[in-house]
Image 1 (cartoon, helix red, strand yellow):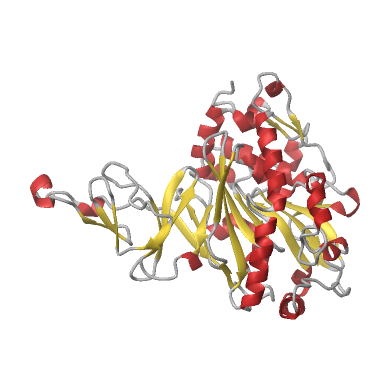
Image 2 (cartoon, one colour):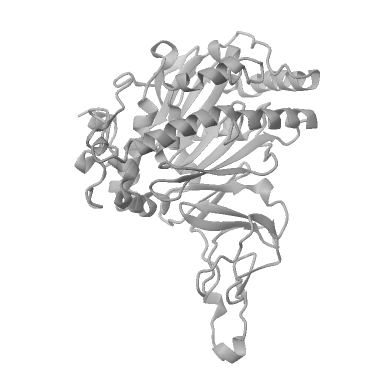
Length: 461
């Protein structure tokens, strides 16, 4: 059993020099409890999207780690994120997933809070408290930091955490590829209908590493590719487009974020896609052309999947989604998935994407069913008394990382592994666990943003 004082590099649980990671980090309950304190109480986490709370009084109950939180808009249109817990005895003050309310009232003892978090109602205030309760001190607990970025809402409990844009660093343009409109316009996306939620019997790090860029598991999706569920009628996605591009693993060791992206050739015309109807095909053809004109070299970049440390994933190419891997103990993860569409897209385009998203993602989607089966068995295989003696192998692509990678006059931000020939690498996965170990070892944010970080050279020792 690993002690809470000996996690990470110090016990060799994450040995990047050997490319080995202990199964213990997926199943050890003490390690999990430390994750809640050292990672989820300090990092920036995705809470929701502004399009879910467009009006004053709108609320959406979200999650940060295991904590239930309320994303809401007050009467002055300001956005807040509060701990969903009454300050009197802890009962949830908001038990509905979403809605609109003038006040949020605890159903246990009746304390009521306005949508700006103030305690505004206390039953028997004069009789029971003799009018002496200082209500200004007993408002809802609010996150230390909040950031609204292109419609998405992010929050951190730690006042010492760097600002969100600094937390993302040079990874930001890859996030923009998901959040911007398809034609390259700044922002302009919205959530399509509600969100999907389901639970998976595995540790949250299994899906997190998968979406960091596990390029080795395509055998799992062989039947889906043969079925041709993609928008062009081939593979799961727009495969002709991807096959003509450079496939890259891109990681940011100083931040712990990573993506699998495709860089399209500079002058080659894109193959036909989205052959659903003239309205749909024409919309995407015009958007592709407009994006190239607006974004230049960035218009050639397709950020397929990626992970914002610790637990937020994105797919920038169809299906265009955001996902959060909410931990529900060491052995269970609650997956939340938001589906994005261009706000100004025709109704026929939105309906086409809705149908594609449903058959691709989520517990009813063909692709994600494959993934969940893998994660479930991998987690179960990590729990055995004998199995835990044997580490997992993460050696792929060791030593092939390229800084200042450039192709056809475009210098790609981040540390890159070119998979055009190599086909697969675990460069991005190692980056995720490097940052995981740093968070688990660091006592203060100063250590996470200083030269103390365990970089590539130290990890190779």
